[in-house]
Image (cartoon, rainbow, N blue to C red; front, side):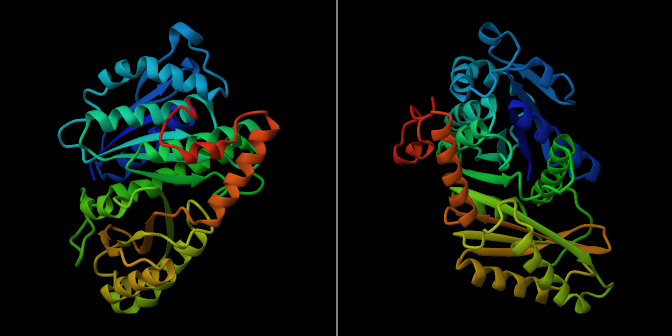
Length: 357
């Protein structure tokens, strides 16, 4: 899938840059261009992608802190400048645009929905969000911001892929180490999804292409991605159980939003050397995910890659019933009350952006 990435805010810029780096290292050539947009000049400086500083007249390059209302206001004022900077980032071959943002900070949580809305107005290409939810220990203001931003960004994108920072946090890691590791994990897994239909090794029996990804996300709403891998035998007939057990692991323990099993649509991608990937295993895995998610829209196929392992990527869309997301919104509501802010769930009850902006 040919994709353009626009990172908004500190986390958004870092994750977008990491996805581009992973894409280049793997040789998928799926990323057409990347633009990182921020109100803080210091956050843009270390990024190895095209950058744009916004809000200079109001915050002088020092960022908006955790004020997502200010972040939204600045993006509204400067969105024309950002759109003008997309020449060479979004081109006629682009099949999808991803707006990447951490939902806890000010610039990302406030600015991403504004930008997504404008992108959908201008482009016919699907506009997806990639939103990072703050971990439990990241502070009340970040929980409140994410609660206020979440549903707004869902409404302004064709689908919103979510990553819970706590999902891939390793105990004993420092905050900096944790965020770096999470960014790399996101990059590898999103990279495999975007590899569909791109420069991959070999020819599989039922290769997943970009249309399968787009059709899965067409359901809209919130989405999550899961992954697991295992060593594989040289002969595909010996790997039926490898494929099915790895699929179970990807769904049960490897989702970017844990405790997510029910969905409106799904996609199972089995990556590995064609000679190692069992078609019977792929079909059994697809049917198992279909039964587990209670969805009649689960697609499945393989992604030919040169590897002695088999990896399984699962994309689930329409996951609003996830108990993890329900728990997060309760936490966000409590955090909102503790910092004397508007109830973040109020944004769920209307179709206007005024609740955030």
